[in-house]
Length: 429
Image (cartoon, rainbow, N blue to C red):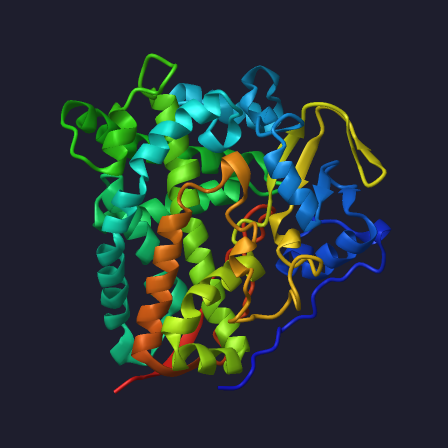
């Protein structure tokens, strides 16, 4: 297997004054920009968006833990202040669907803690442990469906269906509907981008409303006939301190934002990123397949650290915040850029390399930190482990299919996703 080089050189700003993250070409490979900002402007205001960006690991860790100054509340959830396309989307939800309530990720304590308690119960360790065999069997089944072909689109044939089928089973959706659900999550993903036209915003909203009507039928059935699934617990469990269960608006927000996008898209993108990284690092591939029992868990952590499927999330300043000589004013939007911290040389030695023996590999911020630490992380780790394990156990060698890949990522500020990944391989005999 030969190393794979990028088709295009990454955009690297000459100085901080030339930097921006609100540019698809920068987001295609943002790591040089992150490096510049970490070194010269660890708290930096993007001139195109006005967002304050934090890039050093220790600052990011503190921001995640400091809920007195950094709020998860988002201005987009204040419907009275919506204008322009956001207002039109809100009115469309009112007319045809359900206005999504603030998701779990967009709440502060005590509401966040109260609401999260029912998710913690639904995602309790015993239940996730019981899914291990199911995830393993599905991963090997998906690989078996393309292994005799000698080639596949890894994104479509394994990275998408593995986590999406698992979450569908737990959310009461039919396995045969995964590609319709994928179209809905893609539309939601697209709707979080910059510079969307009114037509784009309304189309993305219409797609989300389609998904709402699909899941509304499941909510109503589970209220009448609880079935022990994760969704059944979420629908029927009373939120402590609220005196009620989640309403439809809250459930719809959770289904799209935290469950299907957060619970499948991110794992899909990490699986694809891992295979891309192995294609570019043949020595790592040889070492990994020589002893997966020793190296695979660390490899999974290194993939999340290096490629950070969630590049960053926003916070709102609750007070004026002084950091590295910069004043972040009360009410400002802050981007806690996990992906920049995950390559901080002050935290990780040789941060741009895969190290299968890295002792602090799991110390990355790919699943956030603190009270908003990703509740789906244990399931995501299982899906990554078995997805890669099934591939390693079945494939002797592989390469990116010549002429079929541009290795471009979908242009998005928060999430990092490969559009496709065509590979050719030799199956193990």
